[in-house]
Image (cartoon, rainbow, N blue to C red):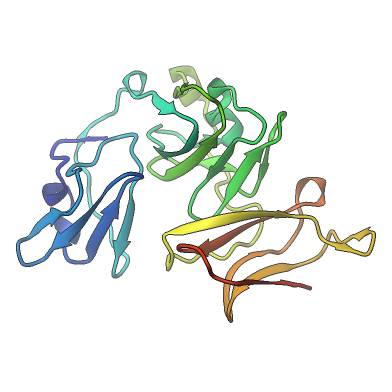
Length: 239
């Protein structure tokens, strides 16, 4: 949806006070309750195709009123490094289908708040199985130039499966307490024996930040670890 009133003050009015901070990859804005305004960054509106991180004191939702997005006009540029993507397609799709026209390369990564997948040169592997309309994702590319992420054709949208698994490939630590995460791919061995049924947990002090309850492709564990900043000592527990 392209909002009729995309400015932060109008669009976020229903959750003003509860939602106090919003950021893009390059900027941010903070809610000033006394002045009922947003300030601090160099952006003041939300756009289709953009991804935003928001801090809320408690769970909330707000309506977005506007016109449907013309997907042909909303190709997303993918540059070298980390790209923030707001998935504007009206239908969900597998990771492979979503990025088929992008021609992903070995080592490309896509992640959301709780899961991730990496392209191994042939297929996408990891806990992230599908992209969901309206949700945000971060895509890493090592390609030196700029690619264009094109959305699916109308034929794909009509033929899209009614049900698409958006659940993680295994149990994850699903916490919204932290704005960022890191990803670990691990092979667990006991001597020379690969432990396919091992359970891996990642702790910061005594707080569980990430876990894997089972290995996936090639006996690898794909673990998303919640956190913020750097310098935190992590402890790995294998059972």
